[in-house]
Length: 192
Image (cartoon, rainbow, N blue to C red):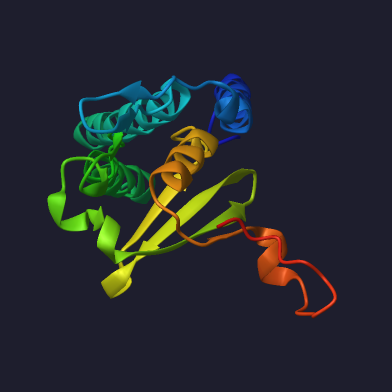
């Protein structure tokens, strides 16, 4: 006898396929950057917010279903405890990492409302491109180990990069620059 009915497994596979498809096509659904009085605000992409909502609902559903299972049949089911612990861990994690607009203004760069993580223009060192699995974007690095990852799944990283390089002349390194061998016969691919 199966632990789960086949219909539940099929539904889970369909949901997983839809979420995976959203992750793959998420960079294609973006919002235009909004001009502000002293800079730009880059809103979070709708598909990124949808993934966070799915994770939040999944965590709350896992806690609720596991708690109902434990109340109905006792607290001895290890699977119910596993689901409860997973949901109990996932919900605060999602809420703590909830994406907020990226602000690029006269003071520097700020993600969300946390001013302590702001990278001021004077602290800005360089920008580099990155690619992790199916996602890409840029990493903006400042003094004191400050680092702001602008993932293309969450923001329009090309628009952020173009706006950033127009505002301040900072070294920009692509992935090709990081893996290319150094040679005096080749031109550097960096933008300044």
